[in-house]
Image: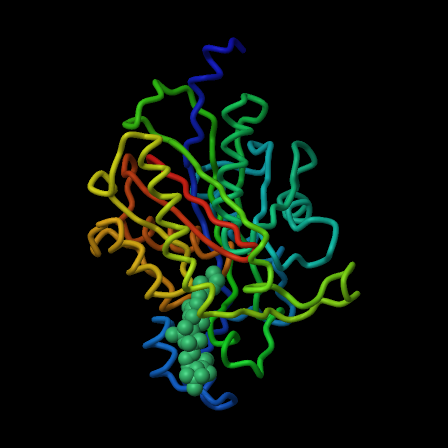
Length: 330
Ligand code: UT7
């Protein structure tokens, strides 16, 4: 492949799928065991319910279902894929990766499969990573999966965290396609990733094999995370607009990480993105970490909002802190 041809490769979305566990836990259900109210949760977060994985469902189970749905949507099988990237902070095991388990589940014995861990920003980091592989010409088609079972990390007696999260998985298939390379051409136009480890203790899990020899529970200073979130995500969105010569008015859809309705609304407002362009699913799924963006994308593709050729901005911020954006011509 010549250098000229390489420059014209774009990572184009050719399939999308998702999976949510059957069990739904409403705010009213939580009122029975916690000192909380539906009113508090809705007012502070927009969340009304979350899906919780069954005992025999693991992150790889959810991720495999989403991957199968994305492949079916693309009219492809595992044989057509040569790269699997799973974004997760809740792997079935410390190792091997969830990605290799999904690879085996798809009956694939070729290509490469690995996990990325950037907590709630994981899907954006996964898309950016896959895009680099596909643009380089080293791989042809990638499954990028966000899959989480955060219910397993929660302290169900801590009302400040356990009401906020849910389980689920979403996946897209990216295909390297020759492109004229303008902003009007389909594919991932740009991605911008950031991290700053000084914020470790604002959102973390208080366990791990090397630190405690245990799994631990999610701990968060919600107000502190909130304080940083809007500035961080709007910064990386501004970077994406600057890199492509586009602006908020050019967007067809804004599909943010789904952590809190107030963060989503404030981010859209700060950049002047019209409310009707914002895809919000936090009310149904709660915060599913790395799965939240592909789950929201799947909803908006499924109901006909996102169509081929639309300009779609994804962004997220999470533990680390990590944050990032990607602008995609769908
Ligand atoms: O995915 C990225 C990571 N996560 C996030 O983006 C989350 C970012 N943070 C948030 O979404 C919000 O900060 C929360 C939803 C977590 C909290 O909202 P807040 O408006 O920042 O509330 P707060 O933490 O300041 O708490 C206000 C009050 C406190 O009581 P006092 O101290 O004022 O008496 C809490 O104890 O609300 C109390 N509270 C609750 N009350 C009923 C906290 N959790 C609950 C609850 N039910 N579940």
